[in-house]
Length: 242
Image 1: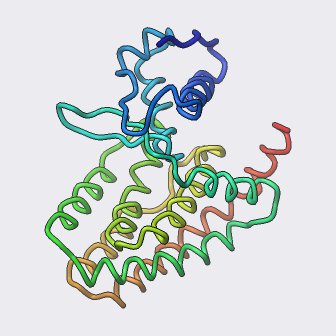
Image 2: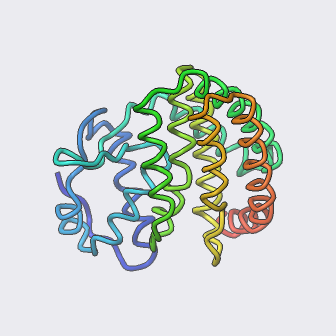
């Protein structure tokens, strides 16, 4: 399989577009691994840094799942929630959904999920949350890597809830949040401090559902205030692009 070389202007965006089109066209089946970073750099004629940025954006938008280890790489997801994700994005882009509404909905859904996660804490959940938190503390020069690391804890807690419908809805909300941050790319990469996730995780590990839900609400409310400041810039950017 081959891809077209792209021009320097908005390189990562062009790569994401081609890879996404290939996935949606069925050229990569669910569960199939994308070409390696080395292979993609050769096909696109770009650096590994650019390829890595593009693949991270695909992860944030739910098109691939990145696995670590000897058999790791970017694996295509089933995209069963793609229409829901796209609908949420369109609602936001056309002013039918605001950051304030997004945050209020996330508080309701994630409050329920984190309560359930705290009630059924397992060793593997504790390990995954610890790994995700450790990743947040490392400096990530690529903006997509930075955003991805901040969303990972939320994805893990959503999976731990055991409710696939809630997980699907939450995933679409996470994607919308990531889309906003990725599009605006604020000069100061401040979404939230790792300490905010530490408070949530500590309550989950201690099996304190209400404390975990309260910590999640405080965290989302603080993050919502920061995201609200980006909303105007996002809408201006979408208007200019249109």
